[in-house]
Amino acid sequence: MSSWNIQPAEVGSVLSTVFSYIGDEEGTTGLTGDMTALGERLLDADTHAASGPIGVALAEFAQHYFGVLNGAVGLAAGAVDGAGQATLHYVEGDLEMAAEAQAGAGTVEETQTGGGPAFYH
Image (cartoon, rainbow, N blue to C red; front, side):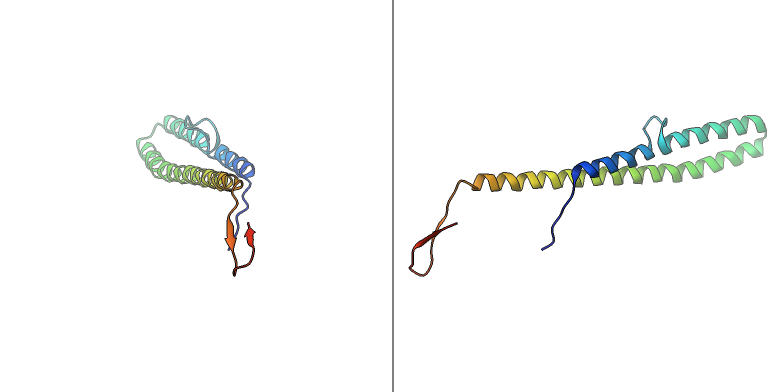
């Protein structure tokens, strides 16, 4: 049987670091912040170019790549959330097993083996 040895505090630290790289929902930090900055630079480029064809090209570029980037943000956030939930379930399962062991610690089961004296577990 395999065993698990997860350190929840260390997992939480790694997940927090990864989450900071993803960024916040307001688009001010991490990858989401970089996306905000890219959007602003694309608008600046469109304004300075003052050209219909360049504006169309920039809009198509933005539509495609922001779709890809939003997908990456969603997948990364989902992975962080999933790992956090899995760790939480691990901790809850560990606590449940500990509670069961503690509840059973006060009971003594009596058994008979081959007609000899009673043995206690």
